Length: 199
Ligand code: AMP
Image (cartoon, rainbow, N blue to C red; front, side, top):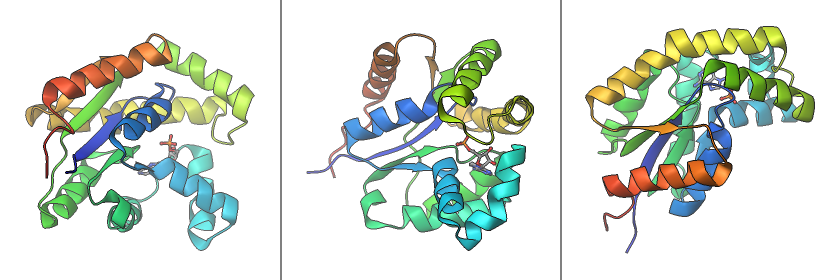
């Protein structure tokens, strides 16, 4: 008996989606597929992909859609994602939503829920400045941070409407302790019956 959960976590940079994504994925025993983490790992290892995307990440720009979607398709085709996954950072614009839809449709799958972490812009900015000091991420400069938040507002926010029309968005208040926020997400997913369907 296996439960499946195909999830997406969305929120502005600094909303805590990475941290909450890991916690939620652990609960369901599914892998986190974070495009940002995949790009950063490739940069660190100096792969061809890493070399291609270094300047893009440093500027806070988006990696081309086709390339990003191909990477996600390959990752989701791996065995550990056959029963579910939690996407973090992808899709990030409407073109990527269409590319993900096409891929999932081929597999007879669809997303069960989209967790939207709601955090005011000022709070996100503050958290990102802190992370810049603590982790020294090269794309956490003031300029790149502001640019990424603008991209979120203009390119990523519209994807929420698409998923809202499908009735799968759970808007979660992202301000509070880590445990409180995880609890809010779990409550919302339980109410939706996510992970409880037996295959
Ligand atoms: P993140 O860790 O999600 O904040 O992503 C870090 C950076 O990786 C972003 O600023 C983009 O440069 C790149 N990136 C991550 N996910 C995507 C995506 N879905 N499409 C395009 N670029 C992405």
